[in-house]
Image 1: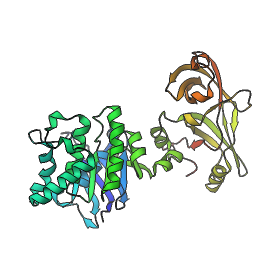
Image 2: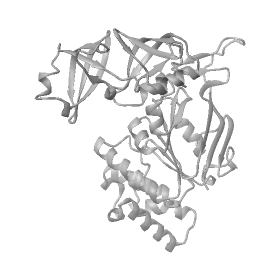
Image 3: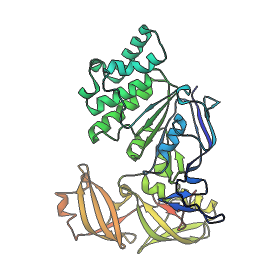
Image 4: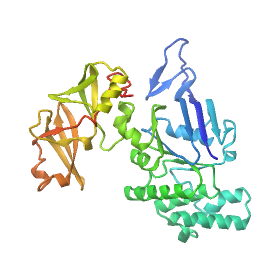
Length: 396
């Protein structure tokens, strides 16, 4: 078993500034991180249970604390407070080499003077495995990752994708309980990233290991993870399956971070009449689905100003409908199977994704700059967020 449990994990980097705050002065934030008397609070209170063989992805913008949290699991960063358990054992004071984990870094970290075979064999030699067993495990890992033909080459003779396969092979060759991966695909071009994502999915199906993966790329998070942990400023915003965080974002940050292009947001009014709700945006009135109305009523949500969210792919073109909105085309982008149309509507940029199958003739004939476009969206795909600082989803 390789369960990982993080309980009230906290990370504070000591404040190196000579000038110290006077006692009683309020805490403040620098570059979105809280500064206390102890120092910079990078991760305030992280809690998560990861099941055996689960693939969990930490995702968020740069500086959100995801790599710091991963490094605390690895033992490369000291845990300021809280408890880390791997396989039911407290690991706070256990050396990295004794945690039965392996880590794949962004920079590959291969030994340039060694062949691929020797790079793969190195962690086994350190543990004094018999030569026959080393050869067997190296050959098995090479075959799993499709790098058998490169075993006698040096890293400099390999492409970026091949080097990353070697780095992954070196990590899995000794069959660790937990495999940690810190943005392993960020140095690759788009085509190689797509190929390596598929390779990692295949690898996950072949080896009996728990994966913890860090990325700032939400496409990687959505395609790889059983669950996604979305972080901002060191704090967890939402934990859920890719489908859950896409369909039911917990707040405005998650809604805007997950999804490409990002969700459109409108200033709107939520109006309650008994247990019935309607949303007024511009000149349109949208009635939430029965399921959404029930959740709003269950939380006793009152009439209020809200931020209305709607994904570009959930907006449809319309004409002559009383509930439609109108925008002026600024830019249209041909994406192959669809056109991304940027509209100036209600004083903001609104993106609409139009499948090319719905367009007759050249798309430029319909979406030229300055053209008027009517659009609408249904009540079952809207998202309603509070106007407070947290931007909480009102259905939660």
